[in-house]
Each structure stands twice: as C-alpha cells, then as structure tokens.
Length: 366
Ligand SMILES: [Zn+2]
Ligand SMILES: [Zn+2]
Image 1 (cartoon, rainbow, N blue to C red):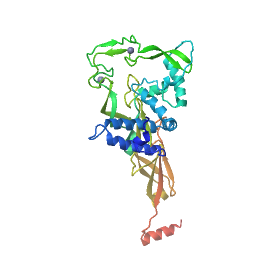
Image 2: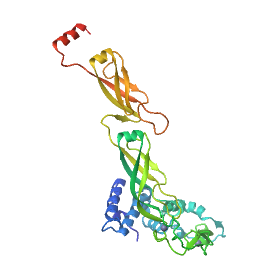
Image 3: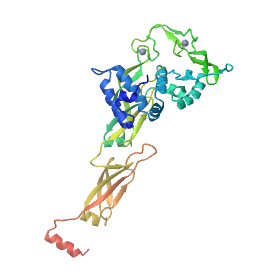
Image 4: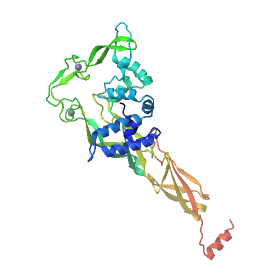
C-alpha cells in the first residue's frame, strides 16, 4: 500500500509549501533520533514525505500518480542505484542489442516523468548526491559591509573519517568483486517496450562498486558516511546585503558511493544600523548644520562607514541639499569599486534669539 505522505506530515492536499515546510520541521524536531523519545523510523518517514511534498514538481507527480510513484521511489532509493519501475513494461521480441544503462536511463527517465515513477538517470544521480542544506546567519551592519568569517554548527552527513568513505574497516581485505570481475556491471536481458534487450545492470553482489571487503567499517557500518555535528566556516564576502543567499558548493551533506556532496545555502540577515541607511551599495545619512554655516559656508566632518570624511559646505547651501561622497559606500560584491555615501543637509533655524540678535537679523534685510 502506498504511504500517505500528507498524513505522515499531518498536512492536507491544499496545504501551501510553507505549511508543509513548517509541518516537516515540527515533525522532524519531535522525532529526531538524537532526542529523548525520538523515533528514527518516524524521522526517516517524515523526511521521505518531505522530500516529495517539499518539492513542487515531485508533489504534483505524487498527487497525480500516488502509489506508482511511491513504489518506484522506494525501490530506487537504497544506494543510488535504483532503476525504478523499469520492469513493468510489457515487451515484444526483438533482436538483442547492447545498450548502456546510462542511455536507457535517459529514455526511461523521460518516460518516468510521464508515467510518474522515479526511475532514470537524473533521479539516480539525485538519490546518490548529498542533500542540499540551508541555514541562516545574522550579522551586523558593518560585518555585511566589510565581510566577516562566521562559523555554522550543523548536523550533517560527512564522509566517514575511519574508512575515508570506502566502507571497508581499516585493515579489512578488499578484493575485486567476483561476480562482475571488478567492473560493477553485469549484462542481463531486460524486457522493455522496445523488446528484449541486453543491458548492463548494476552488479547485485557489490552494488556496482566492483569490490568486496571482508569487514564493514565499524564506525559507519559500511555506509561510508556518518551523521555528525560539524563546524562549517563561512566566509561572508564584503558587500553582502540583507536577504541574500550564499551558496557554498559541496558543503551540504556528503554523497553516498562517491557521489558529490550537496550544497549549503546560507541566508544572510543583516541587523539595522542606527547611524546608517543602506540601499544597494549606497549609504544614506543626514547631517544638521547651523544657520551661519548654511549662509557663509564651512568645512564639516561626516561620519561614513569608512571613518570620518571632511565635506565642504558651500556658502548659501539650501535645506535638503544632498552631497555625494564618492566611493564612500559599500564595496560591490561583484564588479569593482564602492557605492557612494549620500548625505542630506538639514539646517537648524535659530529659534531662541535674544532681542539684539533679532534686531541684527532684521537689519540684514535678507
Ligand atoms: Zn566508515
Ligand atoms: Zn560486482
């Protein structure tokens, strides 16, 4: 019977992607195997459900095809070598011809999309490749402007350090697989919609690795990867802005059986500054001067993110005039140079003049 992924996550068919994500996080939190009272089976089940419902394309396939899709998924996800659903085709006789499984993967991958099962090359690669991960880092305003190195603590699958990912316990005897003579592939006849074809299939003895070993790695139990807390250094480049996402290629989870690691997506949140306003690569501030400075001109100091800069106020400066301090803004992440610092001038109109001052102003007749 097909699993009801909606039921597993406690959502329904009309739930939004956001609701599904939230439901998954809650569920994963509840039954995480590291927690007291956690339940690994339930955790895996929730994860499996989220892998499908959390992905809009897979979700719509699942909605349309339900159980067929499920069956193929379940058959194809063990070690990244599944060829889901493939045998279900009725065949007609045809002369045997040699086809490489990878080519077939494309053909059946395409059909898989139509028929709704997850066979084919692309999904095999996805299954072996490490999972992408996502996290958020909050940084200060100036850290965003000048760049900063931060450390993320994350639980993720990494290559097992005992066996270096090759699954054999150190000292264990590694031999070429006898069944496939070390090639990892065996020829077999396959009934397909094109008739009987001789295809190369993954060797069932060694799961395509071409080797066998006398003792499985005791740390990872022969999987090659382990799930551990690890610290990940994240170099945040100068100029990054609030709401941007950094992609750290290959810093997600380790892949199985030599597949590449997933990516790590780091969402950047930047704290506001009470002194500066940022728009893109430009910085905006305001500065108040007095009436005399506005009328007669002066030289004043403006605080920028790069330190104080002297600005000449010309005689007769109007309220609200904006001056541009060129290249005193934020370094551009891509491209060269910096944005600008724009300072808007406010003028403090004197409001508590004494009788004599008032008379002097009056006599100026301006
Ligand atoms: Zn190991
Ligand atoms: Zn083999």
